[in-house]
Length: 306
Image 1 (cartoon, rainbow, N blue to C red):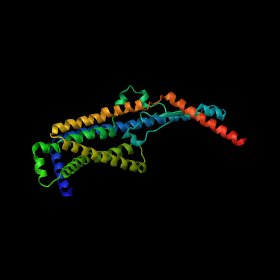
Image 2 (image 1 turned 180 degrees about the vertical axis):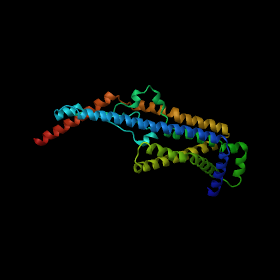
Image 3 (image 1 turned 90 degrees about the vertical axis):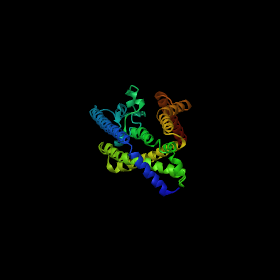
Image 4 (image 1 turned 90 degrees about the horizontal axis):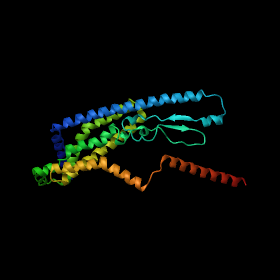
């Protein structure tokens, strides 16, 4: 692989992509949606934490104002605790909507988390929530597809690829050069937005900068590698097809399969292979296992005493 040729090809790809007028419109639309997602994420975390603080203060007030009683009775009275959302949840909601927001603490029982957002949803939540992470994971690959689908297949169609190859340039030089060119355009437009979005959603939600920086750095590196891999995949598919139209069609089918078909198929397959118990069965199973361990401990203690 000739690094000078790779750099030259990447430079030409950079210029070719930036000459496209549609690029500005694509970037503008994605930035607008990202801005909306950042606001929605920040507002979601802010509203959630304020609501949790309100209910937590009510629980504390009820706990402190209860009449004098035996400590054991107090432990059975129980205590309700709420889970705050971490500031970076404004960037990526993760599984917060499904794992529950509160847990009831009481004597002799180990309760699970309850009151998840999904339990109150009408089913729309299953289609996903608009977040910055969702756009970077699903929409940015579409952007890479649209700017890179004709990177190699376009050269084939125009007959330019043969002229490049006879000049002692290898396919490897072309693929790596095109990949770097597409990757450079993607990072030039969206890396600053990625960094700013993480900083905005994190700091505006009250995150400690010292704790936020390592996680933010890991997020930036992860997404940067993700964009690089997808840029390479787009160029490889473009090299395998003869025309830009066929490349675009194949890449859109791959993207659609990855986004809509594959997750549902894997979920269904996993549910059939490993059937998940319902909440009642799960709680009963935990209770029985704890009871068995308690019985073993009692037997061991009795044996030692005798």
